[in-house]
Amino acid sequence: MPVSEDLKRQVLGYICPEDVIELSRELVRIPSDTGHEKTVSDFCVSTLTRMGLDTRGIASPAAPDRPNTVGLWRGSGGGPTVMFSGHLDTVGPGDRAKWITDPYGGEVIDGKIYGRGAMDSKGGGIASIVIALRAIQKAGVRLKGDLLVVGSVDEEVGGRMGMRFLVESNSIRPDMVVYCVHSDMEIKANFKGVCWLEWTVRGQTAHGSMPHRAVNAVLSATRLIGELERRGVLPFDRHPILGDMTYNFGWITGGEYPRYNQVADVCKFGLDVRLVPGQSSAQLEAGMNALIAELRGKDPTFDASFKFATRREPRFVPESESVLQIVKRAATEVMGRPPRVGGTISTGDLTAILEKGIPGIGFGPGDLDRGNAHKENEFIEVDQLVDATKIYALTMMEACGVA
Image (cartoon, rainbow, N blue to C red; front, top):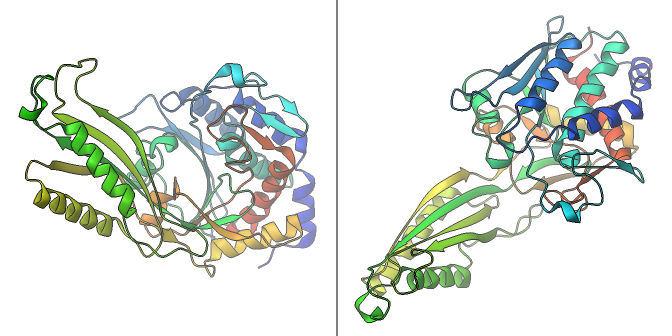
C-alpha cells in the first residue's frame, strides 16, 4: 500500500537541517582512520541504542577491537528487512598544513561541512540515515519490515573486517540494501570490477660491477610494465555508462635499498585494473598468463608471476529492481526531478551483498572529485545532505511498508 502524502509530509517535517548538520559534525570530530574505528563505532552504538534499536558492535575475530555498528529497528511484521549502510572508517588527514580548517573540526563554511569523513561517509553515509529514522520515529510511524542500520569498518581497504565479515558470518540478512555512499544524488547501479595484481619478477643477483653475469629483476619488470602499457592490459568495449577500462601502476619496489653495488634479483609492483561489463577477472588472469608465456618464449631468463590481492567482477543492477525503483521515486519526490541512474568505480561495500544475490544500489550526497575525497579540505554540501536525509526517510517507509 502506498504511503499517504499526509504521512510523508509529517515525517519530512521532522527533518531539521540543524539536526543532520550537528550529527555530521559530531561524527567528523571523532577520528577513525581505517584500523581505529572503535571510538566512532561505540558512539554510533550508543546513539542507536538510545533511539530504541537493538544495537551491537560486531567485530571479526581477526580484528576484535574494530567493531561494526549494527542496529535493528524491528517492524510489526509482514515486510522485508531493509538495510541502510555507510562506512565508519576514513583515510588519514593528509597534509594538515593544506587544510583551511581543522580536519577533525567539522566546521560549516558557506553551506559546506568540512572535515575528514564529512562526505566519505559520515555525513550522508551515517548521519543522514540516523536523522531519517529519527524523523520516522518522531512522527509515530511503525514500519512493517525490519530496518537494519549498519556502520561498517574497513571499507577503505576492501571491507574484509567489515561488510564482508558481516555478510559471510550471517550477522546481517537483509532482503534489499541502500548503500549510502557519495553518488552526487545519482543512483549507482553499474559498477566496475576491481582487480589488484601483485606482481613478482625474479632475476639472478651478482656484483653491481658485473651486471653481465646477472639477470636484473628491475629491468625485467620494466620490460613487463612497458608491454602492459603498450598493449593496454586487456581489450575492452567502451561501456555507455562506465566508460573505459582503466589501469594504474600503484607501487614498485626492487633490490635491497640502499645497495648500489648489487644487481636486483627481485622486483615487485602493484597493478590496479578497473574492469567494465563484458570483461572478467578470469579473462584478465588468462591474458596475464599468456603475456608471461610470450615474454618467457622470447627470453628464457624472464621469470614473473602474479597473485590477486583483490578480485571483484564488474556488476550491474537492472532498473526494474524494486530497491532501485523505490529510491528513484523518493528522490524524484524530494528533488523535483528523476535522478540519473549511473555507475561508479567499484562496488565497495556492496561487493559482498551483490555476491550473495541480495539486490542493492548506491545513493547519497557528495561527489568524489568536487568534494575532495581522500584529499585535504574534504567537504559535504548541506543542501544535498538534507535532501538525502529526506530521500532515505521516504525510502525506508516505502521499502519496509507502513503498519
